[in-house]
Image 1 (cartoon, rainbow, N blue to C red):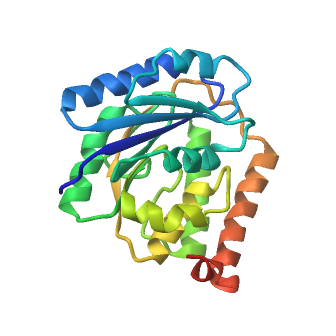
Image 2 (image 1 turned 120 degrees about the vertical axis):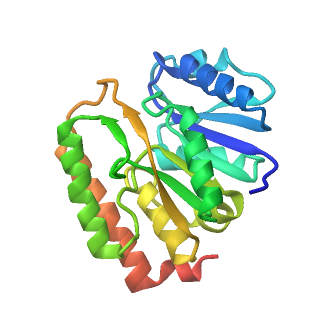
Length: 243
């Protein structure tokens, strides 16, 4: 599979402890691969020293930006995508729970299955997870809701590493309305709706223990946003009207 340049989009929010090491680790890994790449970090209005720490790693191919206020991971990635110049795009969370070296697995699957989108999946049978049981249960419940509403041929939508061919994002990302919790779902629903082939890849998740309990309002917003995507897709036919 031919591509000219990889853009790694990395959203961050209150990651002052991991910001610099995540960027440098990612840079060192891709440097060893010997490919043409750029890293675009978007600080999503952090209230700590994330932007200051991240900015110390800036180079010509590592660009650091900060949003004026916290808008949500989805909005941060959309803003980062506007600044990307690659024809291959990777989303990567800014905390090293998922190491950037897993790019190679996603890329091989994209190439072998001729897919436009490859997502890391915690529910893949070959995935290795150091992940809280509570989160696993919630992930399973959400999977069944998504399957019921959309029939997506996927077992996971929320994991923080995804690989896209640039044209798939150019046709879909601007139509994503959700800024926070369910933006991954809306983007993948759009890709599926546009007949792009989506494949899943096994991943290694090294949970670092920073997640707190998920608040009831967060769960409510996630479900509400998911139902909103269903309404826009099936009832309003909104995504067919916006191109």
